[in-house]
Amino acid sequence: MIVGWIGALLMGLVLGLMGAGGSIISVPVFVYLFGVPATKATGYSLFVVGFAAWIGAWRYHREKLLQYKTGLIFAIPAIIGVYTSRRFIVPSLPEIVLSSPMITKDQFILVVFSMLVLASSIKMIRSTSHTLSEAKKTHPAWLAPQGLFVGIISGFVGAGGGFLIIPALVFWGGLEMKKAVGTSLMIIALQSSIGFLGELQVNPHMNWKLLLTFCSIALIGLWIGIQKSQTVSQETLKKYFGYFLLVIALWIVGKEVLFT
Image 1 (cartoon, rainbow, N blue to C red):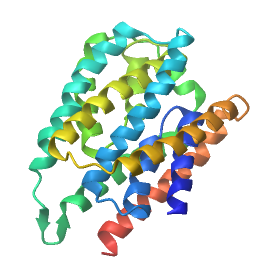
Image 2 (spheres, rainbow, N blue to C red):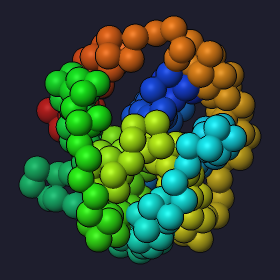
Image 3 (spheres, rainbow, N blue to C red):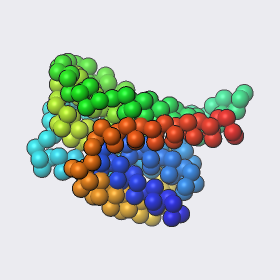
Image 4 (cartoon, one colour):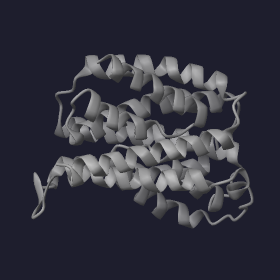
């Protein structure tokens, strides 16, 4: 249990330092340290990520770094996607997804989640601070379909999707990085909240004590991360975190597929 609370602190710390990556830690913590089934853990993650994103978005709002028009073009279809995913797609999956080899619903969700973590880790290891900042295209028509896609994926695996949202806002929305990060937090807060409401309609019995305690501890980590983010090299941090994610992704695949 203590290790789980340390995981909650780490989740908040990462979110405060990088503005993303919260769900990548919260889902494995819920599943492997608190014993929550993967289907429910991804719903719990939406609550935790949404809670933290609202706080982060408020901070960026105070600094006037939210681009509401661009954010809503992305957020509205994302909200539709995440609600559809949690309310209809996830509940419709059979308990046994594959019979030979046998893969359960929870295993399938974790494997899809690990693939997303793997893609995120490679992106972080390879990326540089100039990769996104050099992009100045503006094609807002592409934001809506990408929002729908991100919403569906986010609802399925319980992720905020910041590593997908930020590049879209920069490349197609033409936002500078600081505004893209702040606007991304607003989108994550909205879609995670609606996704969790969809989850509540399917699974109304939540462990609120676990959720609220997790959020309270994560909030401490978030505050520490925000304070430290001004002094830590973001490039170095992203690379080390990328390798950390790579280990998590490979471990989940190994545990759920190779060594079951």
